[in-house]
Amino acid sequence: MAALAPTQTNVLADRLRGVAWLLVSAAVHTGMGMMLLTLSPRPHLEPVLHKVDVQPVATPPPATMPSMRLPDPQLEEVHDDLGITVSVASEQTPNELAAASTFALGEDATSTESTFPSEHWQTTVGIARTAGAANLGGRYDGRSEGGAKKAGSKSHTDAIDAGLQWLKNHQDEDGRWDCDQFMRHDDESSEGCTGAGNAVHDIGVTGLALLAFLGDGSTMRSGPYKDTIKKGVLWLRSQQQESGLFGSNSSPDYIYDHAIAAYAMCEAFGLSNSQLLRETAQKGLDYLESQRNPRAVWRYRPQETDNDTSVTGWCIMAYVSGESFGLTINREALPACAAWLDQVSDASGQHGYTKRGEASSRKRDDHSTRFPPDKGAAMTAVGLFCRYFMSQSEKERPVMIAAADLLLSKLPVWDEQAGTIDHYYWYYGTYALFQMGGSHWKTWQSKLESAVVKTQHHDKAKKNLYGSWDPACAWGDDGGRVYSTAILTLTLEAYYRYTRLVR
Image 1 (spheres, rainbow, N blue to C red):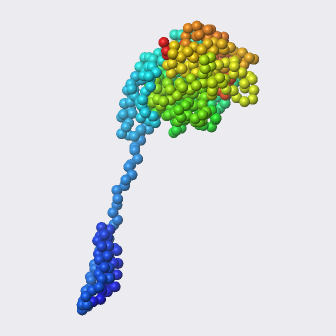
Image 2 (image 1 turned 90 degrees about the vertical axis):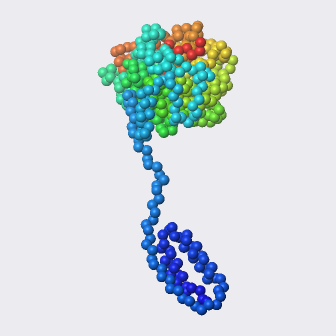
Image 3 (image 1 turned 45 degrees about the vertical axis):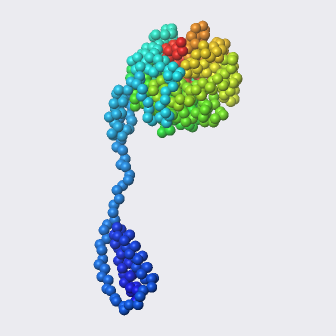
């Protein structure tokens, strides 16, 4: 018997192609069976023809698969009473608002935004948590509104007030302190200011200015300069990139500016009790950690064999301040910093810049001639204060006493001809020897009157200059008048800005 007529088979196959996708599997198996019948030998039979009547089947529309993409979260803006705004998912808004209204500095609150584990080291090194904006406690116990009235001489108090007022008068409306264009705020009826700095350092000098206002006891919530601080904080926050970097990396030493800004943001967050600043401050610390050399400290760029004491000092300040207010740091960083200070110091007390025995850095050209590094001991001052800030004790570390002795051999003297003016050195030296106390502090303190207080502009007839300091120092060309005024105001606040950390 002959096989089924080929035309019938083709008709069947053609019709089956239009069947819905749920019938395809059955059709394939049927077709395969028919092919086997065709190829197999058959017994001889009389031909019997079968008429196959296949009715067309309506093809249903393709099935619609459900989408696997989750809907975009509905974001809502959350505001606090300080003008801070963040965008959060709508279902999280109540929690964010609750956190913003109930957060207290004494709570054990850690950031979920940090890339590092929430493990605190302050129990190891003796850092005290603050108890709240009204009663700071711990290292910030000396700060309050009008803190300057509680310590130091009246001349110091007046100098601080005048310095802060000058900074307030020269702040841009958007909150920034402009290194090279601050004189746009001068009163045209009086002699204008000189002393422009480098525009790339606006981030850093804004951070220094904020630290000066915060150091005097004002916060974003209280004090005579609360609005000034608020504007400065909001501007810095607006300059933060997604990576956490404040500003840009356009200058070779941008990490200095970022470290100072991160330090200021940590203090603004904690002292102002602003929960919605938490992420901003935490991201600033996280960026610093991403720039730290593995198992070491900081330099201009992450390079494991290239570290320096100067930028590391600002980073230590930021880390300890942030951790004091409940932010998260890599718990291995500060022991690495302590090891670095040991690595670059010797029995004489000297702390080196990038290696043991190396003096402070200077720029090219005639910078080292105008400001001989051996006229000061900036790296030793940085190292000594950082040791105190990390709760090291001179009783256990004799190198700290040797370092203090070395600072006394290079006391502050304002002498432009001799090249002894170094506001950076005087700042760190003042804070280090305040911690040391005793005769070391008294000797150093006695020089602050002539080197700092008396060199401030005191002539009220020169209203644009009144309260400021000339940037006639080693780094004045970089930071300008804003830098010198901010850091010397901070220097005079040493009496109460931090309590003595080791007793």
